[in-house]
Length: 377
Image (tube, rainbow, N blue to C red):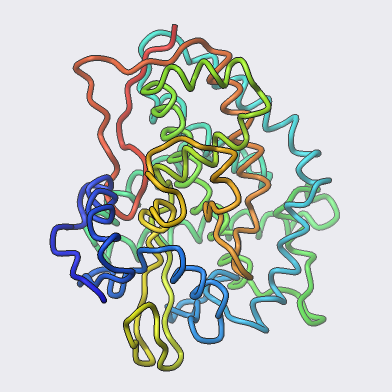
């Protein structure tokens, strides 16, 4: 049985979560003009995630390394990417990550607009530090992010195309500079990517730009959303905030649980390669699907009341970073950044919401908040 998501329009992100909560108990799939076939429950989501030959990631005509690829090509690129997020690189980056967080957390005092004063600069500076990019890119990238969000909300395809070219230009400049420096190029992630080989050949410029774009654009938006969601949850639930202050060992699982309750990444796309039955619906080849994390990670059949905070019990079933061959390769980096950030938030003082300054939720397809005032004392 499927249903129509009539009540949802692509405006308020929380509206989507609310509508999914009302629709999901009645059906595993729902249809919407923008989302096409939306997968609402975890059972069907796991079918999609595990059957990559039927549910393809090649949903766009543009090159997308490796997100928009299927096996065996996808595996060739994953083998290049995954070592960058292994234990040794994470341990190497940790002190730099900690230094960025320590510096920015000094702003956490009194009344703070968390998005612009902390979450956005944090995600931007962390990603630039990880890639080895100069501080001079902080301003242009922050401006680019704001314009990208506006164009996405407005579905302005002309502006989005121009912004994509602008961002690719930033990446191209960093690659060109390192090529020109040769042996004098800094030993950072961007330089090391230039030396990678796939099936015996160097990555093309287009492949490198696509790979780095996916890393960076995804990281900027998602980490900003995650930090804001976690901070809001702590401010709205002082008893959990106090529990985490007293029990540091619970913090990693708590982050995953908060981001299950309020997903930072709302959706991913797939397309069917052949006729397939999903739930009770027979989908023809070429059907477009949206894996709606705003619903899947709140499935009552798996989690009971989706708003109940049960970090240890729910963690084994949490699809925060996906599953299968397309599970997020950058999860170790994101987890490290978020755990260090949570430590900083808890060390700064008690977080609370401010009367009269209602949080403004982000608009689809972004998750989290576009404005969030908190008091730190």
